[in-house]
Amino acid sequence: YIEHRQKLREDPGFVPPVDHPLLAEPLRSTLGVVVFQDQVLDVAMAVAGFTVGEAEGLRRAMSRKRSHEALEAYRGRFLEGALGRGVDAETADRIYDRLVGFSGFGFPKSHAAAFGLLAYQSAWLRHHYPAEFLAALLNAQPMGFYPPASLVRDGQRRGVEVRGPDVNTSEALCVVEDGAVRIGLSLVARVEEEAAEALVEERLRGGPFGGVRELAQRAPLVQPALEALVASGACDCLGLPRRELLWELGLVPRSRSVPGSAGEERQLALPLDPTAATPELPPQTPWERMLADYRTTSLSVGAHPLGLLRPHLPAGVLSSTELAAAPHGSRVSVAGMAIARQRPATAKGVVFMLIEDELGQANLIVPPSVYDRFRAVVRGEPLLLAHGVFERAERNRNVLVRELETLGPLAREVAEQADVHGSLPSAHHFGQR
Image 1 (tube, rainbow, N blue to C red):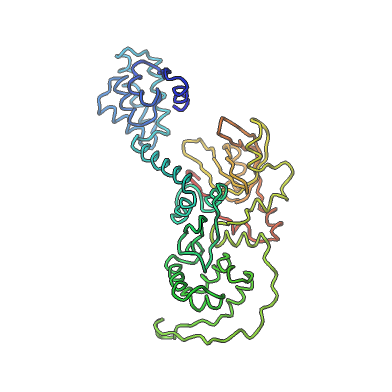
Image 2 (spheres, rainbow, N blue to C red; image 1 turned 135 degrees about the vertical axis):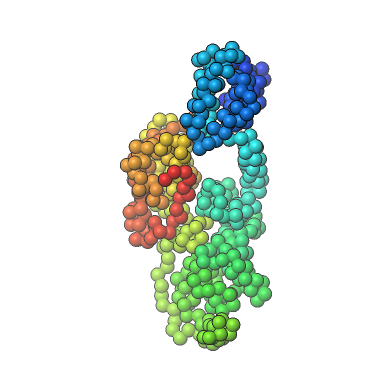
């Protein structure tokens, strides 16, 4: 359809070819190609003389869990009707084969219109209001194909500034702040939206928090939520390194419920200062800060794992930007963080993976034989290295994978044995396991 559409743009007189003149009218709107399930009815009635009921039965057979047997049950009737309308047996068979092939992915025109409208509206918003679009997507999580970390990276590559959570600035949800997206407090692990709203209300009532002690005593949050706020960087505005803030947080006296009161009565905390000075604590490494961001918010507005890992990768490993310029058919190696993997039932065991590095994304095609050899890497490793052949077809760029390696051991070594695997978000999975 796209090929015919392009030819029509280049030559307004172009007439899309069809297998038989009887197909010209049913497929006029889609330039000679069956695109929608609805057209199956029109083709069956025009070519084979199906009644409306028979054509609807054929359409239903295409929707019945893609049943090949149900489709083949209509072939004899289709060929008989087509022969009666002057279509030779070979052409009738070819037309029916195309209908059967179409059944593997066809969908109704109404669905196409709905998805098309949403896709157009989303693309328009993403182009004209990128910050607002990103904030809305983050607030709607979990949803869609891309995890929050990838949405943030896409926005950053498009020039959107993304700011981390901040107890003195953030709202409960993500908002646009001076043209930048500010991550909301409710995106921090263990901080429920209701608790985040209560913290914002307290900040509006009593003013900004001056330190972690004041935050702990004023904000109606449980200890694990306060610790998550510190670990996520939401308390960096308080002027101390995260480890010192966590140390001080552990010494803050807080009000406690009176035993036997079912939480209705509370014992006020005495306003006592710590009796011991904060010890000298080692600063966090870039890996520790980044992994803490992912662990507590599922995203990082700063460093990307591949940005930190890049200097330690084997020679010849391409970035996503370098990959895009590689010649068609060349042997390549590319590393990335697994974002999504798909194994559609109609793909005969092929797995499609999307990986991301610090500069962009790359598509991997994993054949069944390769998947069988590297199943554990495909399904469980967040950081991987793929070796294969680069394929370019117009704007489509893929790596046909021959081998896969996990980058987990290398990442742990570079990160000084930090929990890389447990901190990075899992890839989204679609389709069969």
